[in-house]
Amino acid sequence: MSIRFVALALASLLLAACATGGSRNYGHSDGFARCYDCGQVERIERVYGQRESGGGGAVLGGIIGGVLGNQVGGGSGRTAATVAGAIAGGMVGNELEKDSRSASRYELFIQMDDGRRIVVTQPELNGIRQGSYVRITGNRARLL
Image 1 (tube, rainbow, N blue to C red):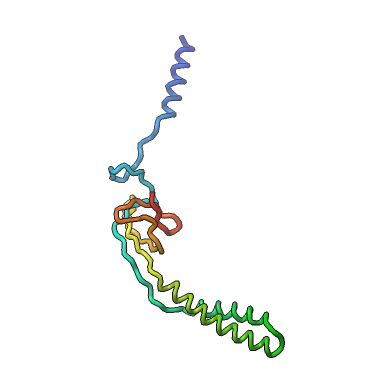
Image 2 (image 1 turned 90 degrees about the horizontal axis):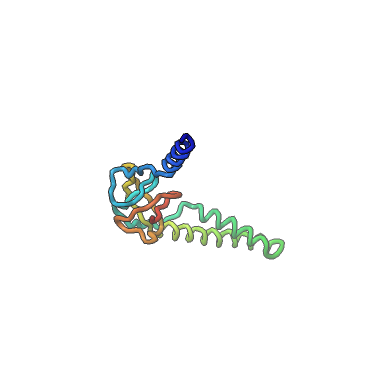
């Protein structure tokens, strides 16, 4: 009789261990599993940057152009090529920086599951629309 009791108790414990706990859904009942870094997109705004430069692109381009120009020729020709390379590299770097800053991007206004409201800015939507349920990873919203 005691062997049956021990076997029954052991089986009950094993079944209890397999039971799943309840999930917290922060008051939502739309069927999505809730998490700390998840939320619903309330609205999306497209933002256009200004075509301006902070100077970093010109400096970096000038350095790269000067180094490349220094590889050409010898003597005073090398010096002229270095200066020309630095000037051309600076101009190209400045334009590239302006182009990257003027690209449009999207601001996603998100109501997080825990009640917080955040704004995430990213260059593309990748299928995200108003009302989409997303997870925030690496300061980017991704569809779930």
